[in-house]
Amino acid sequence: MSKTNPKPDTQILTIRFPVALVRKLDRYVKRFEKEFPGISFQRTDAVRLFVERGITGPMVPERPREEDPKPRKTKSAKKSKAKAAPKKDIKSRLPAKRKPAARKAKPKKKR
Image 1: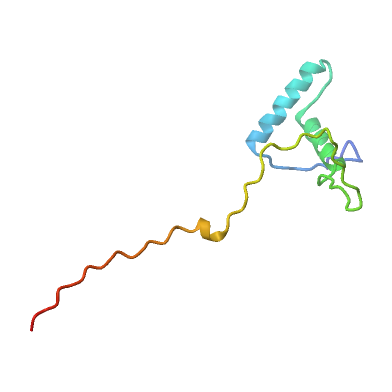
Image 2 (image 1 turned 180 degrees about the vertical axis):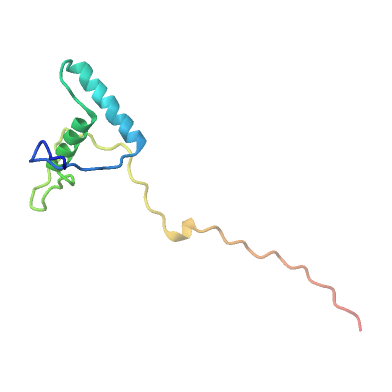
């Protein structure tokens, strides 16, 4: 005889979780049981709750639309005290060229 699913609108799903994540789930379940004594709350209930929250929430944080106007700066907004350093020309960033050392005159060889 085969076992029938007691809840026909559900499906059994087997998932592997890292041990650290299972410990976090267990801590959450214990905290829930302390806050709401008398309510039966198991690890599977916590997983179901978090999956439901994750699916119904936005997948990606919403970005402002291009047509949305940017907020205007008000006069009361503080201006940054630090000013951008002026850009120096490239020559000032290069190391200084060394002048060649003065050559001593070699004495001429006698023939």
